[in-house]
Structures are given as C-alpha cells and as structure tokens.
Image (cartoon, rainbow, N blue to C red; front, side):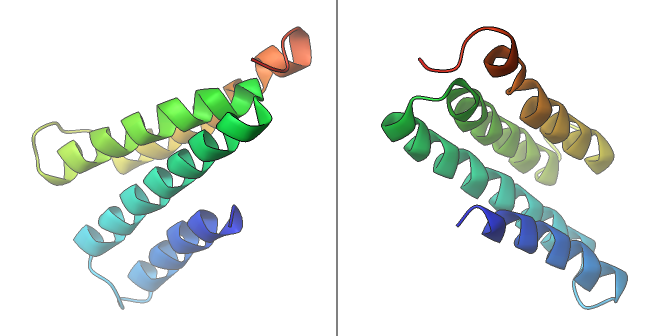
Length: 104
C-alpha cells in the first residue's frame, strides 16, 4: 500500500508529459497521493507508534489541504514547492528517530 501513492504521483506526472492528462488532473492526483500517504501513515502510527509515522501522518494531510487550496486558487504556490515541502517533511520526520526518539 505504501508504494501506491508514489506510483500515482509518478504515473500522473508521466501521463502529463505524454499529454494524456491535463495539468489540473495531475495536480489533483498529486494531492490525492499525498493525502493517501498521510492517512496511511496516521493509521500506521496508531499501531506502531513510530515518531516518523506520527509526523508524516499529521503533516501530509495538512500539505494535501494546502494543495487543494492551491488547486482552488485560494492560495498560490509552485507545485515544485509542494514537492520540496513533501520531501523535507519525509526526510525530516526521521531525524528524531535517528537522534534520540523512536517511539511515541
């Protein structure tokens, strides 16, 4: 299940580059993929208690809401920023585990 959001996001990008999907549909799929990953992390966090699961499970749905607001033009930011934030949160969520704190 963890690979599905990555496949959706990458597949949407590839389909857009091949002119099979509009940019708006690709962006919608990106938001869906990040929301899916976030909900999956939150569900997983409840059973395993890992800190990175809690961080990602909270931050990814918030990022997905920001993505929806971007889709609706309520806010405006580059989708590159969206993915940089995603990767920073993903990588940063492991820092507490590596340094001092693995479980909540």
